[in-house]
Image (cartoon, rainbow, N blue to C red; front, side):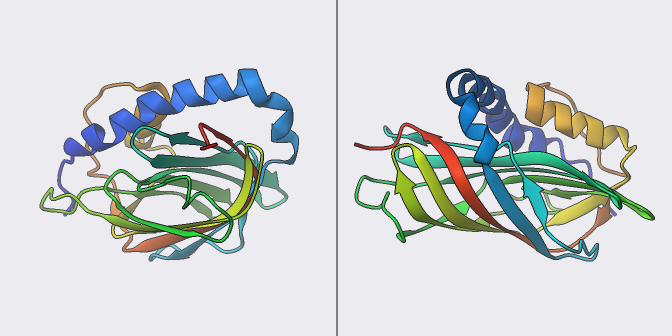
Amino acid sequence: MLKKLISIIICLFFLSSQFSIKVIAHNKSSEPRLKNNIAVCRLIGGNERVLRTFRVTNNFAELDGLDGTLDVELQGEASSGRGSRSLFSSVEVGGVTADSFKPNKLLKNNATEANLIIEVDEGEQRVAIVALNRDENNDILVSPVQLKLTKIKDDIVNGITVVTFPRSITLPLDSPNLTTLKNILENGQDSELNIDDGTENGEITLKCNFQNLPVEGIPD
């Protein structure tokens, strides 16, 4: 039985408050680049199988030169004859230096603040898949991250990111807890989260190939 995970808010709140600021700044300064900005992602594992890939177009990354962390955010919505899908993913990779910020350099990290929400509304499959940063005993989980930049030109990069989330749950699309979680991530809303309507979904891995990803703060 799932327990109340109030502490997930602490893990997510910091990233969510940065999320809104970064996207606003990016949209003002680099909006034309979004035309060719794409990430194609696939979800692997879990009890709830999601077939085919996600193609999302509102993606962004920021490198903090002071502590050497690269924050990669992939998000967007896609509609087709089958229905609709949406993806939000945020992960941070540490130890990034001028020497490591080069094509085909593999960056690795064990992240404690990696976020993922996938919503699928296609026929009978109407479900949200959410990654959690805490186990059932409320202990912190780490998500292994691999990031390789295959092309760097000015402040635009191509690459591949692979994130493994040790624990995930599924929620109904009309779950109030899903709405609360999205508000936490997108708006920095501080609220208590009770996931008693969730179902354990096991370990999942998100693999994304991205192109023309705008990056702010890259080293000279």
